[in-house]
Image 1 (cartoon, rainbow, N blue to C red):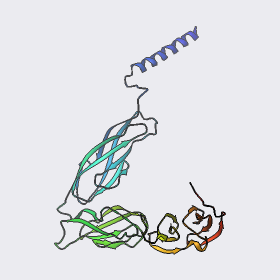
Image 2: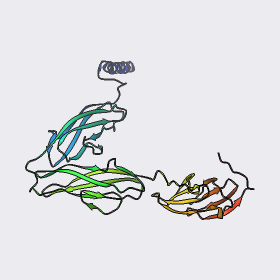
Image 3: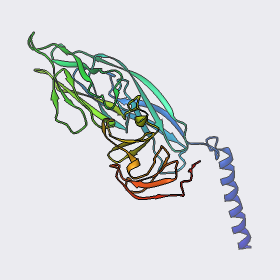
Image 4: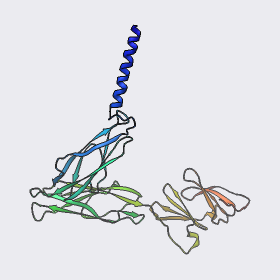
Amino acid sequence: MKNYKILFATIIILSSLILSCELDSDFDPNALPTISDLNISSPETLSCSLPCSVTFTATSTLEFPSSPTDQVTYSWDFGDGSSTDTGNNIIHEYTGIDSYTITLTASASEAKDVVITKSFTVSANPDVTAISNLSITSPSPLNCNLPNCAPVFTATSELLFPNTAGDQVTYLWDFGDGSAEEMGNDITHAYTDEGEYNITLKANAPGATEVSFEQTYTVNPKTSFFASNDDSFIGMDIREVSDGFIVFGLSKMSKFDKQGNFLFTRDPSTEIPNYYFGDFHVLPDDKTLVVSYNGSYADMNANLNFDNTGSVNSAIIYTF
């Protein structure tokens, strides 16, 4: 009889639990993670006066997370052309007087991104000397092609409420290529290697806080070689080696540096008899297997020196 009482009590408890789950209107076993109540909680007033360095804080609620450790991540676009920042508390400096649109994106595992926008106003402070709207106005676009890459870089800004009428902004350039910093407004700078360079421009004026601006400058490789009426110099094919390029002509080969400047020419017929433009195959250590259409062949290094010459019975070699 005692066992029956225990069984009956167990059934009553389980029934109560099942009933409570059915009556809980908030319970949804199929609910997906959801981000809600996204907001910029600080600063309380979305405005400042120059100089303007502000800590921005994002808040939100993550409902039904897929894991107890899931968290919301935040991405900030401050609307002033600067790079996107990621984090909950972000310090950002505005350098120009304007009204900016801040875009805040919240993300979480398996949840749909949520985006809000807020307007942020930057004004002048009549009691403080400040540098505003610092930018690189030339060259435009911010790229060049080797070997002719020595543009003039020009900086502009506004000096607000200077201490004296003669005060001016001075500019310091770091062109991101390991060269020494240069001072001035219009600076001619030459790049010699391809790549992307991060230019840092700093502006100073008496009584003003230093302002900096960063911009990426792209240097592209040489896109074409020379033209000549001499068919021995016509570029039929090009191979890049560690220190430059080899141009395969109809009857000669030419070496160029990485900037596309001509270095020297070799006549392969001295090592490959009756050489006429054929085919080449890349070998290790900057070596090239050169095969003429008359069947002669040789190994060639990056300085156009030959060894291991031979011949395939003067047969014509075709490569597909």
